Amino acid sequence: MKHFLLLFLLGPLFSYSQDCKLIRDTDPFTKEIKLSTGFMYFSGASLSIDADSREVDLLFSIEGANRCFDDQSTAVIHFEGTKVKMSLRNAGTMNCEGLYHFIYKNAQNTTAQLQKLTTQKVSQIVFTGTNKKEVVVLLTPKDQELLISLGTCLVNEAKKLIH
Image 1 (cartoon, rainbow, N blue to C red):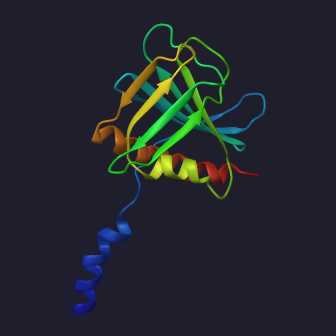
Image 2 (cartoon, rainbow, N blue to C red):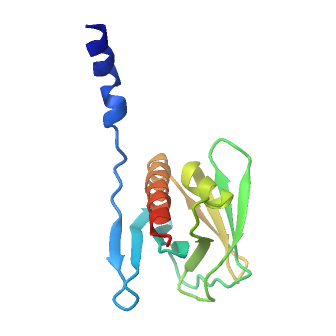
């Protein structure tokens, strides 16, 4: 009876599985598999995290007109419950469509920055474009959970794509 009770109480622990719904696509030319979270919508921006065997790309699409970013543009990420910030430069090309990239190498050992972005709650991101105006993107608790859930899922699945 004790063993049955113990198994009954531990059942939910073993049956828990991460709800990992990613978009899986195959490039028609290279036949390489690509993963994507699809777009997550936040206040003032949207984010899509994509991965292939070489890299993990966080693509932000900032709302509004004249959102120009180049390689000198910065994004300062503020984490919930701490004064720690992370500052990153745009890894994408110069554009005025509001597109901003964080690009990381897809590796078995996830970089510390990508690990932090996908496991700790982000409270806000402050983007500074070529015009030096700041655009603040606030994340609600629901947005934070979505980013952690889909980000962690994608990073874990992306490791399986490495050749």
